[in-house]
Amino acid sequence: MKAIFTLLVLITGVMVSSCQESDLSPDQRIEFQLVVFNELGERTNSLNAGEDFSIGLDLINHTKDTLYFSWSDYRRLFTQFYGREDFLLVYEMESETMNPIGKPYDLKNQPNFATINLPPTKIPPQGKREMIFGFFWSYRQENQPMDKGRYFSSFTDLVAIDGIEVSISTSIEFKID
Image (tube, rainbow, N blue to C red):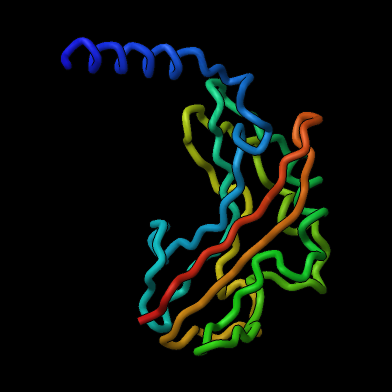
């Protein structure tokens, strides 16, 4: 019995060690994920009524190398996402319906307002993450502090990073107490 267990451990070890980063699909190398931050900049899915928050998009690096996200990367992707109906759109979830309540940025503004001063970002390897786009809810003057309830946002798209197409399909639910 001990020999079988040892053999299974060895086989598992060989299988894990033989899995190379090149075996990962482009969708597994980097990942985009919607996130919510409270006023203190902490990731959360639970906020207090009336509390300002930011919602944004994290880029997660699953490779062994540091990724460099340049100003032109920000500009290109934000220009692609900016006009999308679902980009950072927040819905209130009521029983079986979802009512759109707004976005944290104003579509009437030019897209360069968000990317003009963004420095290049280094995204460390091994599952580390960095918010690449994010806006405080209060940034848009029309947005009112949010009441108690359950909220939702989702985003899907296809992007090219370093010539590799990456599918984005992410959502987040959060509540306000």
